[in-house]
Length: 198
Image (cartoon, rainbow, N blue to C red; front, side, top):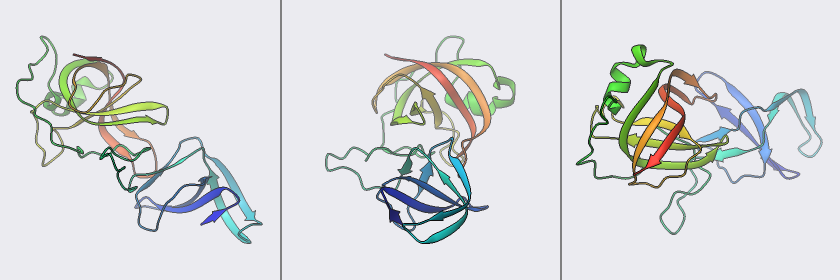
């Protein structure tokens, strides 16, 4: 619902439904959306414009629509939401492991041992989503791991810009069970990484 420059959406994260209001955003029922962190809860809120009462509604700085159609150029419509699956096929041949470093598969298989520790690895960017919750999001693959269980695709947050297809050297901390809310949870993620485009 749109009212007075705001879009109101009822988000179902699989375990509960939450009303969220943010700046006017084009969404439709069934779209996959994500609300920005830090929302202000308004309890027993009455919207005069909608003439409707809400038990609680969270006012947020942005609502991101991951289901928005791609732009004409073929690049993903922005802003988008980081998702576990890569957006495009990237040639992963010829990627060498950093001496003393890890592979993408290593980070998943040794996650308990690596939790809270800094890792270094080399891979290719298969998806890039800029400025979501103040960070750039990379999906990095190096040809290791299993696409069936997702251990081939590592999510990395960074302040550095990169492009799909770039070979990157990633150095960052491994975090387990990171929950960004609204159903977006990562069993393994490398956060606030230093990324060097090679």
